Length: 241
Image 1 (cartoon, one colour):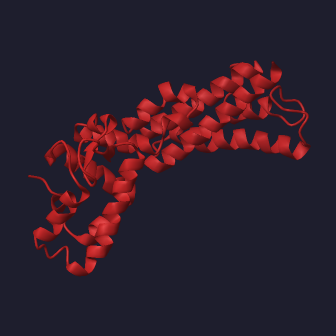
Image 2: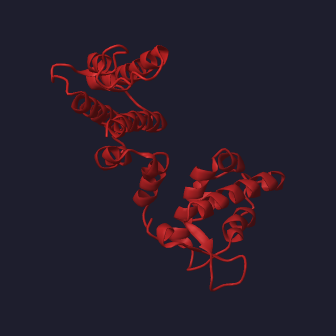
Image 3: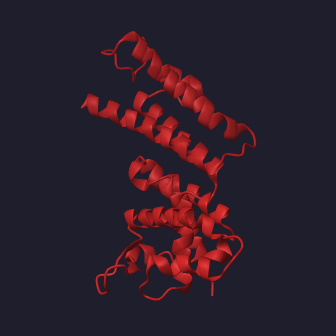
């Protein structure tokens, strides 16, 4: 039977994890070894009952607090809940939590959690987020900024010959850009052009032209930036109505 000790052999390994990562380990344990209901102490007690040298009593308070934080995160994510059919202190998996049946399911949720669907532009939800969840971070980033390029070109009605930073500087030129809001101060118009141009140059160009290793968190941040730029293009369309 798998227990928390099998995943985290000592207290320092456990307390070094943030609530999200530890919470996902707890969830995986619940999926593998628990019955229909359980208490938080069920997971904790195995650590101390094993009399492991990795979990000295001096570390017990820190461990209990870390597990409590992770448990609170699981509840806030809607993955576990108080069992309505049992006395206080018993919990059960929610339908959302029960759907994460395998290590692969848990890993997919873990990856997707830092790129929540609700914060993404609709174009990126269908075209980019699946790539991110598969771990194709560089491809996902390139595709995200490609969507920005397509949206800007279509809105500005500029030639297909204009690409990348040249396209952004033409579309958002502070004095003549078709997407430039001339009602804003000159400095702000300049800043918007630099924002779009710099984002394309930094986010899209490097992984498009050479092998670049992009960490998961960095990919999520870049995709979030692309999502914001797409929203700015949408806002321009709204102002034109």
